[in-house]
Image (cartoon, rainbow, N blue to C red; front, top):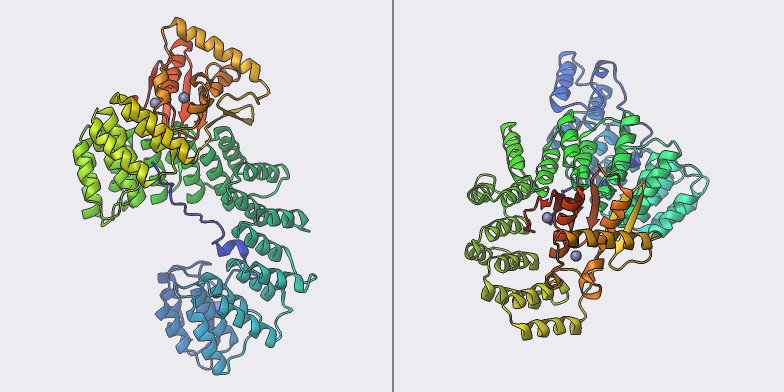
Length: 633
Ligand code: ZN
Ligand code: ZN
């Protein structure tokens, strides 16, 4: 599966993290004191009705307070708050600010700029609350030129000394990635800044990918809060420096800092991406120890993390224990089950999902189709694919085509898969052709395979995996001259070579091996163990298959002897350090080669161990000489 789960917690977008207000609660009016902090629209209407009954609709104060509650309601329609404002006689700055706040949060934030210029003309005054709302609207759109005009007003009207206005300005420029401007405001009055100002700068640098500057700023902060820590952690994780993000989280915990949802979701996703189960468990145990509520975002991130770290059992446990679940949580679980080869369970869960009256999304169908493909359910797969388009109006994306081509290809229905690809409305990507090529190879359709392989090399000449696939199919057709030609072509074109590596966690740290690795501190012991394993497997009748050197996607195969592939080194190390009754968990960045797959199966048979390997495309649960992928990957 190529798609990631679309994450609900998109970093740097939450306004809540950069609270610009002194207080987020609505000011109280005696009649309105019973309205909850974030009211629903019907609750607002009830409050409004109370004002009507008591004859208070002519009171400017009462109506302006109703508007203040409106700003805290996420579902109040714009025509409603415009109508309330229109009925206020001689609106004052408080009323105008509350309408601004409503507009800044609405689906059309730029309306607040129009309203501002209109109310300026009408002689409504401004105060220091006016500008943060306007600037918030400008950051949401985002509109740099208009925001700069608001900045000019701030200076003209003499509000540029106000801390809250200054913070709003820094936040606005940072959101627009205008870091020079941000910095200018930040440095203008060094005595007028607080932790919110620093956090806004930090977020800006993290957003623009200037991690080194963010790092320096973070180090220099006179005071840090949970938002500072989580912003820095997010900066690392978003910038792909996952390990550093995880390390900083540990530091945050060690220092006894309060953790927030944003930090937790970020580090859980980093652990999931790296496949680091121990790390993920460390975060989970922290959540438990602090009694942190399992919110939708945290629960979903846990489900996803456990699934991606190879423990589908724990993933299910979290899912079953979630106090409430939304479509994101269900998607994570359905996709998790499918990647673990548990197609039937994934489809059962999908049925439950439908029974609860939820509406599947595009990601749900990636999981469902993937599940059909893993369970070999061709008829069901076709039907779900059709239902997705016809019943739910979801346009199939590359991921969906990938699943269905994989499903048809596995079942040997290569011509149907080809027909589907040729009828696609978007042009198929190389991965899709690669999937079909794999099917040709398995089902012995060599001529078609050769045609597709040549097309693939033409389509994406910089990817060495395609050459390896093409050479592999020529080898199967015994066209040795073509094999040599393709391999020569590959080395002449100097393709991108992705180095293969395997990760294994042991006793709280992560060990990374590359093919033929001699760097690890226990290297000599690892090679001795590997030799011992080889001897025992040899006695049991295992013979390395050197021909698979041709069909692996990785680079390492060509450089190093097959017996020193990174996953074998990791397995040997795992045999040394992982307790005998626990599975050896390995994460590999590329696809496992045929021989290492066979090797892993034999290890579990001869030594009675269990191995869970996450490779570039799926999970392999090796146990008693078999693999959960049923040798098709
Ligand atoms: Zn291998
Ligand atoms: Zn497997």
